[in-house]
Each structure stands twice: as C-alpha cells, then as structure tokens.
Length: 92
Image: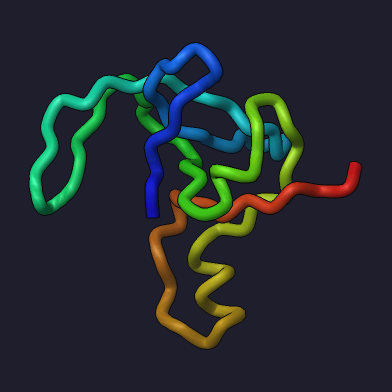
C-alpha cells in the first residue's frame, strides 16, 4: 500500500495518529528508494504511522486506531509491528 501522501500544497509526507486519536500529516524527505523500499527522514523517534486507510482521513481528524498486532490477532494471523496503526474514521 502507498504510505506516502501529498498535502493540499503538494508537500510529501505521511499520516500519523497521536495518543488522543488525532491524525497528523508529517512532512518527510525521501533519502533513498530502491526495489526494497523507501527510506525517509523527518519523522520523530517514535511514531504511530497509519498504514491502512490513510487516504480516507485528514490532518486533524479524530480516528480510532487499531494496532496491527491487535488487528492480526483478531483475524487469527501472526502479530504485526505494533508501532504501525490502522485508522478508521469515528463518528464523533
């Protein structure tokens, strides 16, 4: 899935979610890209990166984030990386 996004001004970044469930757009810089992935700079040391559904949420929106390990456990699969989060828009 595409993790990188553009904001309304065309700035490259990623979407994260904080402990309060608020989405944040964080601008990043690509420092390397190859067949194995993309390396970026500009993120804080710890971050909950939205890896699924980032195209459906906006900066400042409140979401209910589900860590990949919880999502995988519920589906009966192996646990994923706990630092990543899935986001779904909440109704309030």
